[in-house]
Length: 130
Image (cartoon, rainbow, N blue to C red):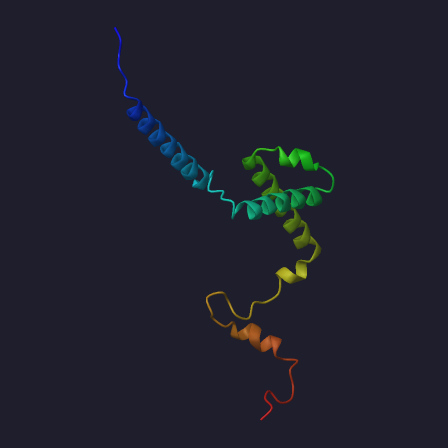
């Protein structure tokens, strides 16, 4: 059995298929992979390298750069938070007087009158330049 194919129809189908392929390439290039676009990629890369540098320097040689780079993300974040907590505890032990300072104005805006009066005991003289 012989099938007669119209050559003009074949050309139209081929050109339409070619146009569809071009459009799909454009759409695929515009989609973001894990929300990473060409505009945000440099900042994401900088944040990654900055985090790795923080962990390597804070660990004082316990971790190497490659170890942190190839570490799973969840473990890298866990390691960073543990090192941050350890450094904060060490700083709190070194500077206990900062923790015992009286707070004059609380985060909600109320004034601690007693602490304010104690802080102003050393202030003498004019309080304005009128």
